[in-house]
Length: 320
Image (cartoon, rainbow, N blue to C red; front, side):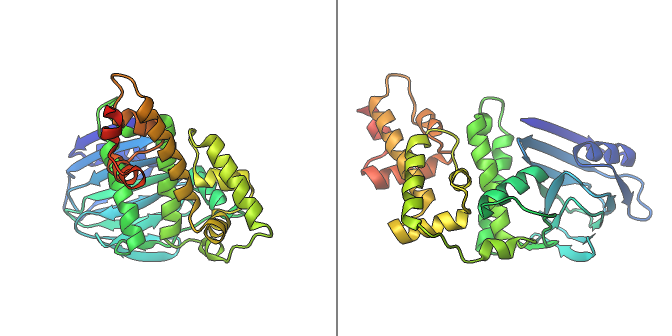
């Protein structure tokens, strides 16, 4: 995991260091102000990252097109006005601003406006969108500039970003995301949730009705694939991609044929495997180790799901 921490009062030093994390840009403090109070902590794993950034003073920020990444900027306090791709938004703790890679931006941050910023690599976004749709995307994907953070979907996504920030702040070998497969799954989940939570140029395609000529055969093939590979870094997007259908099509077919979702089926397979591993575990094996080995990042959710399926806690099964 990459991490950068910077504190400075010098405007030019702030511009250079923030530029190293993001991209070259112009940084102008408000009239009459000669210094900033920059505090920045940037953490990244794979194609995603979280940057906590506060200039202390009111500043104007003018980056050129980001080119290779998307940014979702969430003020913790204060506000920002953002002009991007011919649109404008006033960003507050309830409204994030979203910058797509293809256009320059002009932003005015108020004083005392610390931001939590989510970074997503453009290729990772394109890849996850292709999984959701079942085919590669033609053309550039642009998000709407203003993102309401008060919806249920946005709140769920923001909790994931906060979890990512917390795990990336842990010491080496102490984070759940140290394992590459776990980190890859979480990256896909965060980007996928963003694509479903906030409007972009392909949102209508994602919402289009899903049809498949042989839903029963599709579900049988998906179940077989999940049973054979649930121990790997497998996501529902991977299953859909392997079967050359969209995630939406796969989900609709599972609901019609089995009355469940592919995510629930995958989770059940992993719970069964974790159950067998706990029963066979030798001395020194922990519940956390078993959970992570079987793709469970949220240990509280793992314990709850395990108890619901087997009628006892994972620790009880381990002690037997």
